[in-house]
Length: 361
Image 1: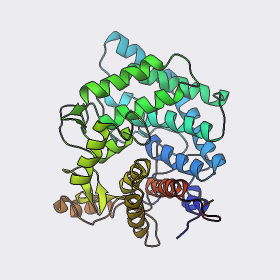
Image 2: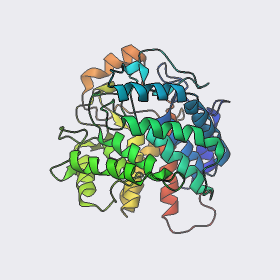
Image 3: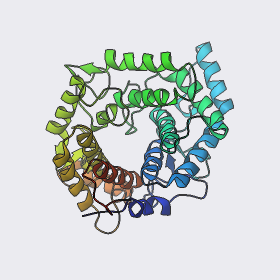
Image 4: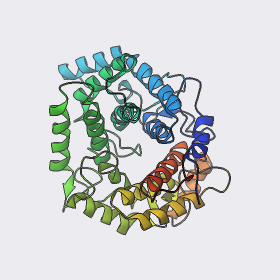
């Protein structure tokens, strides 16, 4: 079955705000806002589909939004240099209103991964268009982001699932490494910074020959896939990465891919975006049949109303499902990040398949 990538991009384009921002989910009570994390992969998926103009609108929005917080970052840097305590709400937001304004609603705020990811995504956006110099319109946002990350990258923070504060998370550090590394062709002098992050990961976030969820914790998390694909901290054939993928398969692959073994959010279901992510890894490892099987599973999750955040198949901790439904309703649908990862996996499968005229465009 062939799918047109621009057709798959339609739900993403449909929900892009006039500002250029993307809501995580337009219909879920907690998600009508823009996270740099979700939105960067949405924009990357659009770039993979050839929708560069829409992706560019997002990156301009992100750059302007972050550049507008230059004074806030300068104040944070001054506080850290003086050794003053910084309350969580004082850090840069993890999510924004679609017009770029901050949200004062008590959401877990100090999350660094999105700030690295948007740098990585911007570099990919430019690379895919053959642009080799950083356009001036992006420079202030990039500079503010790098100043912020240089000051706070070694700070424990919330992870990509907005849990477990005050820990050093592998997927967060991988995101920062990817962003700094991706900016090196555009911003001189970043090599020591990316090398320091890489060394920290190798020294503190590998246990028993594999990556771990966070420092001092032996379990794996599906977000560890990001370390190899697409962030390139380790190659896909590095023994540490290979062993990590094997551990994820053994503990978290049950039809779809779950986040981590003790997950209780909506009962700990399988996540559509993570299942697509493992398929992306399989493609890069040359495991094409296994990638096709996961792609078939992802496709089957769309019942006509979009892809959800997670499914109720094979819940790890089903006792918690009714609790979360009572709090916020059914799991978010359509989750734009899920749609983005489906598109990315379709693009990867197509790119690595035998050329067939008329299939994918």
